Length: 238
Image (spheres, rainbow, N blue to C red):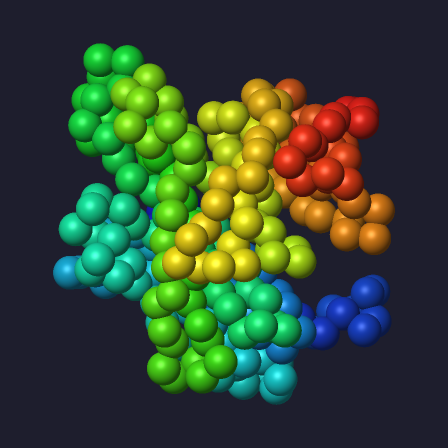
């Protein structure tokens, strides 16, 4: 709602595409990821929890009655280091792990005060949670993107996808970022691909070793070969 700023998610039955049926609504929710019956959403955090996005997980086995599994806020350990949740996340249903992109605002970049909210995040990372029991999530680890101490380096990961031990991120200011998250206490940066054009969307086609990057500024789509994650290569763009 552009007037009030309210957001919500709606679930529809589209078994008959010509006659979609409304099933349910989740307030204060922007749908982000659906993995099986697990729906991940982001929302506006309540007063006192403003450090980053509010992340929620729902069980939609019964789409008429979504069940809240848990709500996630930025852990204090990260807040103390000026990191906060972005509204980018993914879930690995096999290993029961939740991955959330984080951002940290630096004091100055290129001589500009980056606490100015118009600049958004300027340094990014990945936080990992064990959600084998959604009611008792365990924070496993966190790491940030490369050159963090370089005052002229900026990063803002706006979307992530997980596949086979790796997290692929769409970095608004750079392009593709790839992280090895198999050991959450020792997350490693694998490589990146500089695409430009404000990359804000990402999808993966594992069976073809392809990553698709969406460019906002040009309205384009970039096809990247990730057969060798340490050396991603652009194949084409449209």
